[in-house]
Image (cartoon, rainbow over all chains, first blue to last red):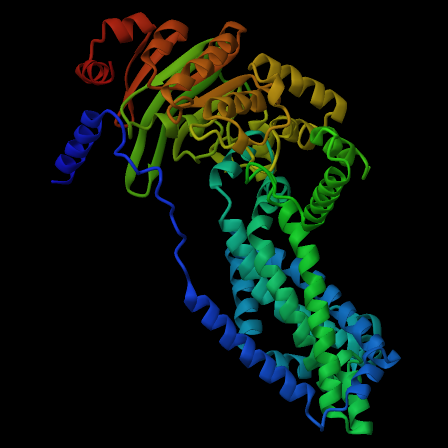
Length: 341
Length: 259
């Protein structure tokens, strides 16, 4: 039926010799979306109510927030939080790659070990692991290097000097995160076409060289977006380290509020800092994603920086055109293109 | 260890068997390829010809028989009564002398055409960067793609990708080139360019084993044509013998179906 109708319409148009009169004259009015405006109004209303109710609350002392936002203790706490997140993520990523490769290894011992690691660290609460590392000194008074099951000792030191609160926090966050990250890395490794591995082998590359130069760079494209997520998650989880007195942002803030009893104001201070840090973190993620997308898309989209540059150029070109309308616009843009270098 | 009496023989396969589980895909393949010879392997899909090719550079482990390339037993050390499987690094060393071209090209997508070619010479053969790049440019020129050195595989057509893949394999200066249906994934109008590069390579004296469905190529370029079916060599001989005057019923049936 449809085919028949199509044929007959074609026939009709051909018979007419030209499209029916008036077809080109129709002015298509875009579909209106009144619902969007209603939704926007409702949401703006809710958000404004929320902001005014918090901001206008007589119990929130705004000068206190302003006073503490750049307090040296808070800033030191921010530094500690950044250090924990960066070191923790480095530890977690390295360990995650090792675990993922172990999981995919033909060696059953390595495979099982990696599985048990993930099973344990994913299966127990992070809070419990943090407390465990914090109280390691109660379990083991000394850290000793020697041959197990023999009295031979090469080196020994009290746990409290080795496992400082910072190290305990780092181990807790890093080892826990490694379990989650290893699954992300494993998914990334599995996403690489096995044909590329065969091609690498056929060129005489060893398995480890193939992993480093062929498989991992391709896996990174899949790994980086969720790892950005994990980094943000670790940044915020570092607040849990208050429990073992690591001097990070949240600990410093709650120490201050314990003295001045301005809990809400300091929570606002802390939240603003965490929001700022998570925002900043998305920048390196963007550039890393870009780097590992090479060769996948046909051309990489411009970076935000390049977009701003282009916008500035466009605006300046337009401004020039307005002030010197006689100039050939192409020349103007060409001069504008050269200038920023 | 040279077990081959004839020093002209580069590839010597003796009763090669391969099982995938209970399924025996190679049921004792015995073949010899002389230096400078082009051998074309024909056969219906599932006949084991690609598997045999992959056994030669030990991408597949064989379950019986022996494969020697230039006198070296592939993948194993022969210690009198038993064979000992080699370490992956030792196998990697053996594979350097054998280039392979795949049906699906398998170029490394995160590297440019030039980087695809220089990766193994730089990282495996430890050549100097300038030397490797110079050689890669010569190879790209040889396959007619000197203007594409900065292109990523995704920016190249299938035929161009396959020609880069051939250049990549040649960069390791192999003694032997294996082609696993190199034109099967290509649009018909791109097949000619790839076959042209392969023809030139054959004329330059490269020893080649080509699994293909291109009967014309086998007839023109092949020195030796082998017809395989169901894991055995059904018929082998000169292109004229096998393709024009096949003696076996299965060969005739296959040739009728593809021509």
